[in-house]
Image (tube, helix red, strand yellow):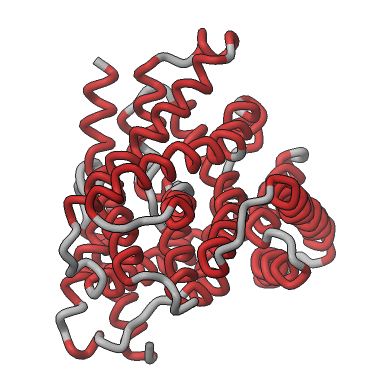
Length: 394
């Protein structure tokens, strides 16, 4: 992608953010993806491609850090057990249920192994609430739901990457699943990422006091966002969890003292511009990239996989919140329905799918099916959040 293409995508994104007046029904990311699909038919944009490396190394650290840094620590404390359960054990169960369902349904249409089915499930497991959190907060009087959806997405990204890595290894090399090695690797990758991020966030909260220049404070935050991610990936732990933890730790340290408010002001001024800029380019590129994969014959199966992903999440979520007496009293079936529906697939799912494509051994049908399911989730679930919230609140 050249500079002219980048600038044009950025201008289009800014225009969409500026004129979109009906985000309740058509969230900005949906408009950007649809526009991206339209741009794919223009020869000028034919060379625009998105890869796992571009998403992971350029876009993701900024988005993860911003989401974590802004997420109120008091909300995390209030819902820590629910968020932790859904982001780890809940996600593992969802992948298992969804993978088996895809295997049973998929073989009615095409030949699909259980390993391939689990691989697809791990790609569809992470959630991306960027297009729905603001809608939830505006359309529902219960902000707890939005907090849980947003907090869960911060947790489940790291879990899904570990699962994807394991299933990808099995898929490419036809190896068997070993629970012992999986648990060991998962704990090392997850806990290592959390520890590294905590160190980065704490150091940033102390180093920021050595300068009164806002531009230097912003520079430090960029180092924390990208440095924690790159170092984490470099030493073999979760860069995603490292960046998320660094953002949360920084928010926690700043929240302990009201005198830190001016630091937040400096960082917010910068990251409030970076986030929509990154999202504009990213979702437009996803739209351009998806167009080539969406021209295939098994849309019926893709729709069934999308429906299965929503139902699997709903079943696991309902079993989780209703299986624990304390949560049973505080979560209704309506709450579970709304949380399940807002588990939208997005940036992380596309990044993992591009990781499968990069191996050059993935079936083109498998990639198309998964991309179609992601697009269906992104469009249908995002558009449906506002009317569903209003209907359930009556």
